[in-house]
Length: 125
View 1 (cartoon, rainbow, N blue to C red):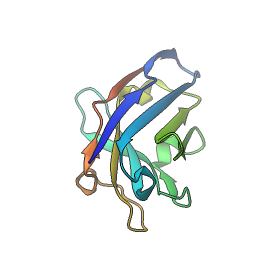
View 2: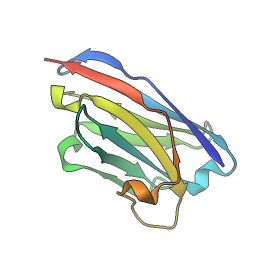
View 3: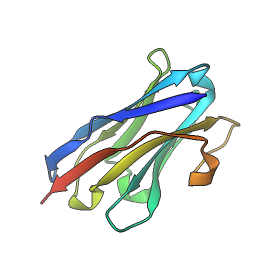
View 4: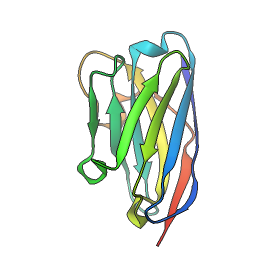
């Protein structure tokens, strides 16, 4: 069992930065792949970024490449999403999710077993 809690959301002006954290409780956190998803108002939840257990596998949706960085600190059971050069279209509730890592990337919601409650990110123009 893994329990996830997101934090770090807030209101920021376009061009600004935020760092989201996903703190996990439970055993063997380092064996889990973590994904970040986001859901904008009136839209479906979509994939943003993923990181494998050993930091060897990282991938992003094209719209955030070069602006967002996903990382993890297994000693702290925490995954981070550093978001720079934020745009109004990044406004959404951001969720982190976890699943046992089996050596590939995971992009789909149903592939993840555990979910956090989400944190709101609002980017003003």
